[in-house]
Length: 103
Image (cartoon, rainbow, N blue to C red; front, side, top):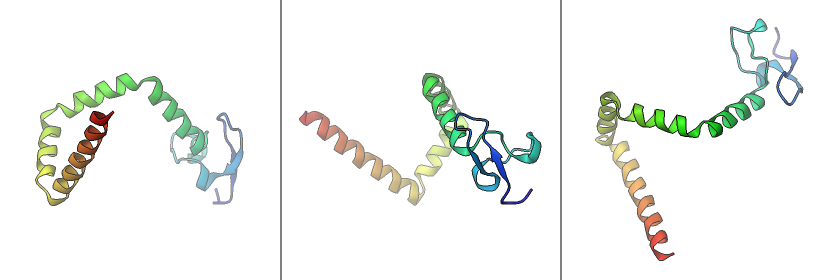
């Protein structure tokens, strides 16, 4: 398959697009590319996440409570980059809190 080959999206858009730039690679599909274009796939993933937001948040909380991830966060907080990120987060929180108290 050449980079200039075209394929029709089986998603909602139904457009005919360049394979190399508009479809994700996936060896499970014939031809080695997904049947829906990147734009339709992104929209589908976004919609799914919105529908199941509580599930994904709970899963994230469970994962972040595991000892391995807690230790990684502590280790990162000790690095210069981690300290910089934490300072910026604290500053954003203080600004947000100040705005909230004024209202």
